[in-house]
Length: 323
Image (tube, rainbow, N blue to C red; front, side, top):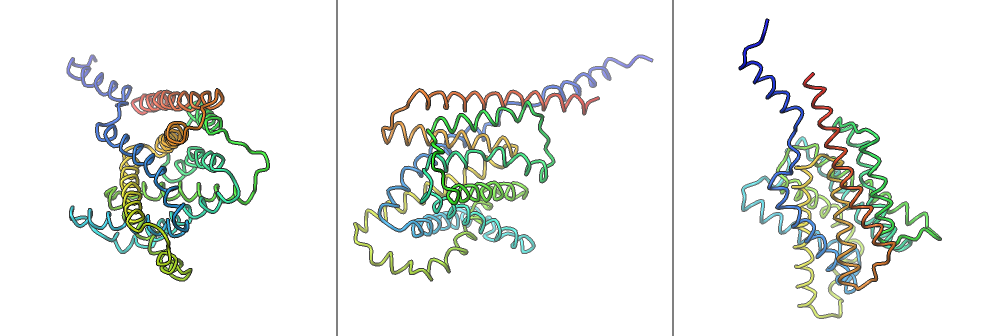
């Protein structure tokens, strides 16, 4: 028997809804991405200025202190909980500790390897995000979708002019540990259905609480008290650096909630490329060689290819579901 026109219309509508999933990013994401990128650039510009004035462990403590203070004020103002549910406390404590370990490993590794190599290792986060995405979120990717990730990593290495000659294993291991901590924190946060501002605050708060005993034991207050510098300039720099860190982390939490896990990792690599281009080529005046330019083009083309192949894969999966 033939179906009624209304039934056929509904079937066509359902099929179209499967074949054409919404590919355009939501307006909220388009608004927050520039904020995330710009605050990351400013944060990476301010932090080296702070490192030149105080010990790097003190830098981490001061950044987290300002970030937690901002987060506390914002959560109180919006009426959001200052602590996670009791049953989730161990998990958020672990994520905070991993966040701290990731920060410290990255800084420690820079004693042995150049920043370009450390950032390239961190830029490989999409490759680490893939297995975590499969295990935690049940997402599956074809080789056509994964191939652009290798192009992105290779392009990033060219864009920063990475040199692996005389590579130090300890430095590379520290950068790799920092990368794994970073991806685990992002994956653990995304698996929870909480407000992004709350998640950002909980991670940074528990990271700060984990660092506080070690900072006190290592003589942190004494180091800050004996500084011979312009205290007003230092206070202004700490406040500006911490504010950029807070806004960057809050924006990152929002993007993490909006995007699939691997897509977030790809976007994060683009953010790192923006930092390299603006901080290195524009602010510091480093020459952009043909090799650097080729690397930038490879990263951008790899990201575009990933989005195209991922969209095609999503449409194919949707059609199979409709069948």
